[in-house]
Image (cartoon, rainbow, N blue to C red; front, side, top):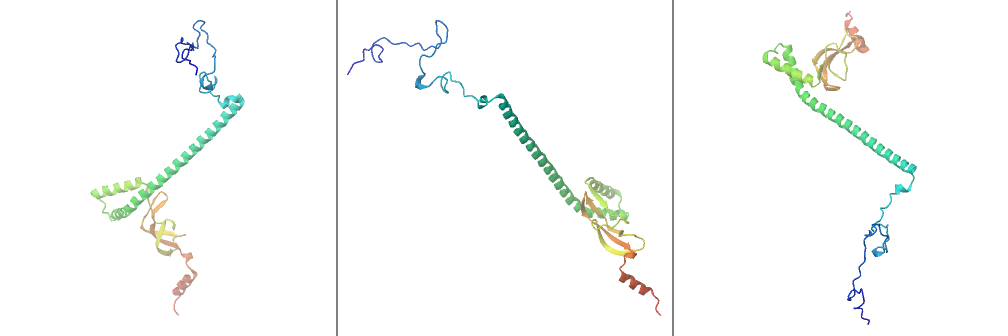
Length: 228
């Protein structure tokens, strides 16, 4: 077996050490030296992960300016469409929430006012009887102002045209003094909140005499004839 312990530059020998200058800049000329050999590991200059490597190119760099502009225009149009769709959805959502909130508010107010209708009836009867005086009058008027501020509307007057949607007929008769179904007596006023009827007005209704059924008219004529 050959003894290499005394070979010059051997790892284990006694020869002079070998000095390799790996500086990139030549100390004498100041110029950049060319690499004398391939980097360790078989990597080639310019490959990713090696010294001096160039970053990978963006795919958009491989196409022309016109194609890049078309891609940017298309992307901008898609983002704009997404933004417009989101804005429309938000506007619709806000309108729906506002509408539901207003509807819930009217339901709550309507429930409270419905409970106060009997109190308003008592105030009305006391006013008609002349008993609304002093402190009771001030309190009663304050209650009426609050209900009006909340949107409560009182309706039902003698002479109103009878409308079954807002009136409730408790009595019915015929009269020569009306030319159509008419409220001739208001037994209890009605109240509404906006378009919502909280309580229909309870009235007596009179219709023209010519609308009497023929059988009833005949019986009335027979009753008017003198007995022979």
